[in-house]
Amino acid sequence: ALEQADLDAIKQMIQDATSAKGDNKGDGKGDDGNKPDGNDDDVAKIKADAEAKKNAEEQLKNAIAFNLSRDSFIESNKKFIPEGVATVFKAYASRNFGNEIEQADNYRKVILDEIFGDQKNIDVLPESMKSEIARYKSLPESDKIKQSGKYFVVVDTFLTIKKGMAQKEFNNAGGSSATSAYAERFAKLSDNFNNKG
Image (cartoon, rainbow, N blue to C red; front, side):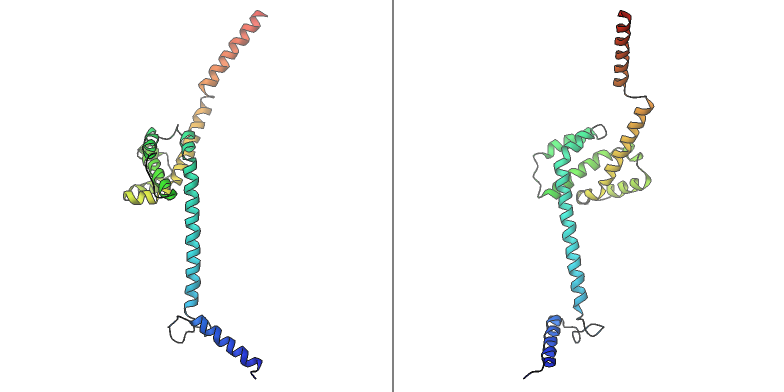
């Protein structure tokens, strides 16, 4: 009968053979004499695959979110976005895209191209963002589409700056002309009421 030590030794041999299977390097053992050479590579590949899957899922999620909010984004920022964006969007309405990511990338490119086709809009950006736009503009058209999601953060920065500038102008003017007109009208009504009193 086999002793427990013999059974343990056989189990270990099976595990070693299973771990080393498909590994033709040397004796199938790594530098420490225990791990097969391919083991670290397998772990790295699994991690890389998981990371790629996570990135793809994130990209898809962002694309869907952008596509769903695209019209409201344009509407809420129309004061700062060139009219050409809405024109191209209408033309794209009948266009078929392969998937959500491709659709989002094409629409983002339109926004990037229209806003930063005007040097005045580039001039308001911080230097680091100006260099990002210069890099974007140097890309071939197909790469501009594929990488539009990466560069779209510049649009968000641009809109934040433009809204801040608009708010500053509003504050310096002491409020909107509509508010001023309303205040004047209210004052006249008040005077009329007091005069009748």
